[in-house]
Image 1 (tube, helix red, strand yellow):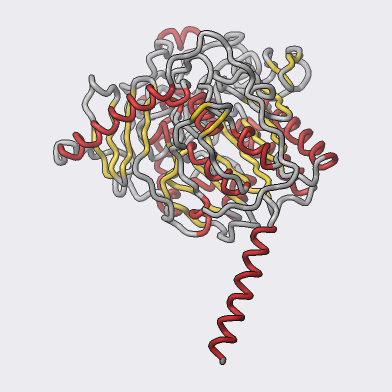
Image 2: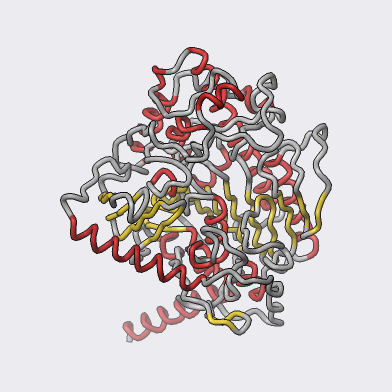
Length: 552
């Protein structure tokens, strides 16, 4: 009898638990995406930059230590919003519009009752209009990455806005946060009974290095110790945190982007303090050391300001009483950039560094430090180019505080993860066209337990560079078919310091064949770009009643 009573009691508790789970409101979703931020820039990933709001998200949630992007701005954004590798949707390289079967995040979430908002950088070349084609209810878009103080190309809800007056006091990160807050306030006033998806895509710390003077002053002289010392300090903190277990990758002075200005031209147009290579800090002149330290202080100031603006957006969510059931993500679109170019309004060598009339780039020396301890930079598919510091906080659904997650993830995982959280189910049909299977994985199990998400592989290709990760093995090549494949065991060599391709030729051969197969498969799925623009991808109307939560 006692056994029967216990079983009945357990069934009652289980039924009650399931009923509560099915009735739980769908979470709001808030994504903060940084632009060209290094793996170790934030304090909670070993950096010395002041990031209290980002660090608080990590302390109240989880940090993913092995999460990946695509090594570049637009492929990452395309993959995050569509759920496909950029090569599957014609976005790396960008060729025409998205395939007819491709959807963006709002197209998945709006039928489930979500209101969808975007503020900041867009850079999804295959989707021209954020609202009409992308499904967002509101969108404030900066299509000008060359002017943080006075952008000239802006739209709101697909309508052009006038160029910003240079005397207005405008700064990109603040304006992006302002519009995100505006949309959230409207949501609270008019749509409080619906969940929201808010995508906040900063342009910081993407070049040009520009920031408010008071933020730059906070880091004055901080970086005179140089990039080699900063790298060593960050590595110590990263190892102490348990984020990495490797040594420090070598600086690679001979590898820089092909499109960088020659060093002599940089010195002529920027000044004698410029340096075009990631050489040892002690090889620089005193003038170069001072100038390079100033550049890093501006990079730090841009991240500091972005963190302040993240705090303002979070405060708005808190004022709405929505923090408990809002899942917040923070990540970067690629590693720090070694690029050194001059665009926009050019560079005035007499202007204060970091002001609207200066046009400076971080360069390979500091990019190497910002990606500590990983190898290479943005655009390369070595770990320094494709690793992102992902943070996830959700009090209602993630009970862990300050824990690490070593699950291997990728930006293609956002769509299946958010679909699960929203109670939706993926369908391969979209406007009468059949879509390929989503390649990503649902990360929700990892929110509760480390190493609970498995996958067969992760594929990378950008600017002619290629890589494939299978388990802890990774092959990577600067030019597949032209340059040899390197092989690394990432369980002990995340910094890609010991190429073991000669010791495991069969492993290299097998993985290279898989990479070739995927490259052909993804290009075939993408198909050729259309000759004419198809009709806008309008979202289906939200259902009159919300669907039930779906199991895995």
